Structure formats: C-alpha cells, structure tokens
Length: 291
Length: 162
Image (spheres, rainbow over the protein chains, first blue to last red):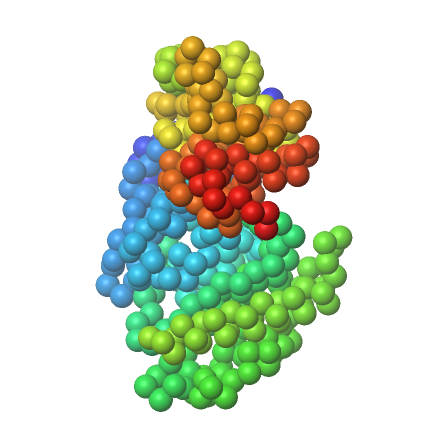
C-alpha cells in the first residue's frame, strides 16, 4: 500500500459532506474522482488524516439549464460531460476541451468539479471556466456562496475556497448568436498535460466585427490565465482584418510566470502558446463566421 | 486505523472484506481476490496496465481505492474470456496479430480495447490510436496492437500503417 493511512468517509448528501469538512478541519481532503489526488497520495506528495469521498452524493451529479447558464454538478464525470448533447449545444467549448483530458479511462472516473477544484494550470476545465466567466457554487456548513472564476484560481493547485468548503457545481454562461469555439494544445503525448494551450471563444456581430472574445490560456502560468488585454483590443475589430499570428503574439506578451522545466523553457512555451492561440483563433473565428 | 467494509462483485462472484481504506482496488484484486491477471506497472495512473471494468467502464484500478468500488461490479482480465478458457474476440485478435510480446501490459490493453469497442464498434485508425494512448507497451511498437483492434472490430480493410 503506497498512500499513508487515512480515515475514509463516504457521505451521501452535500450537507453531510459539508458537516464532515467543518468537523475534521485542515486534516481532511475531498476525494472526487481521485485521478489527480490518488497519484499524489501514492507518491506521498500529499498526506491527509481524512478523505471525504463525495462520489456517492447524487445531488452533485447532473447537467441542467438554469436561466442563461448550463449548470454542471461538480461530481459529473468528464466522460458524462463529453457525452452530453446538452453540453455540446449549450457550451461547445466545454465539449471541445473534454477529449484533451487524460485518457478515456481517466475521464470515466475524473470529475468536472475535481478538475476545477484541483486547479492545475495545465488542465483544460479550469481554463474553460475562466474563459467563459463561469461561476462556482460552493457549499459549507455555514451556507452557500458563489465565486466568480476570475476570483477562484489564486495560485498553483490553489483556489479561494476555504478548507471547509466543497465545490457543488459550476454554471457556464451560454453564448448565443454567431459564436465559435476552439481548443488547441500541444502535449508531448496525447493525454499528457499540455506544455501550452488555449480555450478560445469568439462572438461576431451582424457586420462580422468581434462582439466579444475570450482566450483562456492553459499551462502558461501558475494559474489558468486570461489574455484580457488582447481581448479588449480585439473587441469591435472586423474579424477578416485580424491576423491570427498577431493575436497569438499579443496573447502571450504580458505573461509574467510562464513555467520552465526539462520539457521546455519559458521562451519555448511562450512561442508554442502563441502558435496555439493563432490556431484556435482561426478555427473559432471560422466557426463563428459560419454561424 | 482507517478500515472499512467493501462489498463488490468481481467477475460475477460476490466478495465481502474488511480492508484498509488506503488499499487500492488493484491491490484488492490481486491480494484479496488472488486475481493476479491485473498487472501493476507504475501504480500512479500512467501506464494503464491495471485497467479493469467498473460497471462496464474501463478505469485504472490503481487510481481507485477498493472502498470506492463498494457496490460495484468489477470485471478483470480473468472475466473477459469464456469460463472454459476460450479467448474473447479481442484476446484472439491480439494473439493473431502479434499484439503482445512479454505480455505485461496486455491485460490492460485487452480490458481497455474491450470497453472501447463496446462504445465504438467501427473505429477509425485515429480513434483507435487515441483510445490506446492511455496504455503503454514497451515491446510491440503498437502496430500489432493496432492491427488487433482492427481485426477485433472486423475492420480488416483499414490496416495500412499510418
């Protein structure tokens, strides 16, 4: 047995899970699909006295329309997200990001909420949530609150949730009109964490001008990043006059802490990121133009 | 500390055991059920050798605690072929197409491919390569495995190397 010993708790309601987290304090960790947590436990990069398994909580699973957003329960598996016709039509960016996550065996266990709460900057769903300005529905024994995606990711594998809080669901705004979406990333092998990538969304107005756009950068910092300056510059521009390569260079220009390791220097990742943004921009704007 | 009871059906047989919560499903299958066909390569979710079916879906049994499988139906490589030892169509295709050499990774591949073909009975070359990406093989170079998946899918016409 590789992980250190822990007490296992398997609540069946969100209220029970929140109660356990309140009682157990810092020594407890939420176990969702376990596809990131269990390797960390096996390698003893992380040790917890208590694991609170939320996999048996039915109310954390599901996909449903709520006003102008699509709510996805935190416990919904990535495989269920990828297979959902509702997701594909309402939040295509989420559907397009899903095949990039790990491998199909991983997606059968891994959950949307687990991926977002784990907050790996090289993961796909956090970047999608950030790009689309999703809102995180967070529960604790004290009640519920909503955290905007831009206020959620605050460091490597770190979020603004308190240790007694549980991510219950994520609401993704539905983009209408002439919109287009694309995810591009480069990994050394299919299914590995990306060295650089982007989740891109574009909406055009009736005159082919950019009404709004969003670029969520993957693996380009200690958190997922938005290319906000570039997005503001592109708004209102005629899409036919925008050069994808230029968008790519602009999107990575202001990044302050691009990772650098054996797999690639920060400079290399910056160039790779620019190329991924250029590709995604072209694909998303072409899709929006056909809409 | 940290013990829990697990009730699980493995290849049609019901098991009840009190186990340490930190026991992975892979270790439970090998050490408690004595089903050593499930192989452990990396034990942290990279190699895919330990793949099993949970309620019909392929998962890595090293990335699951046995207690999480409570109430589930597990199928291991021992449950893929017929009880009399006759190979499944996927197993036979691996044998026919030189889809294995040392055999260490083979249980994970066979289990994964079995689940994959249930969801996608007529896959393209690209879809097969994507589906196989979660399993590592150090002997075959994968080409024989690719042929085997095509044969098992009954798509003999698509076997050109990519």
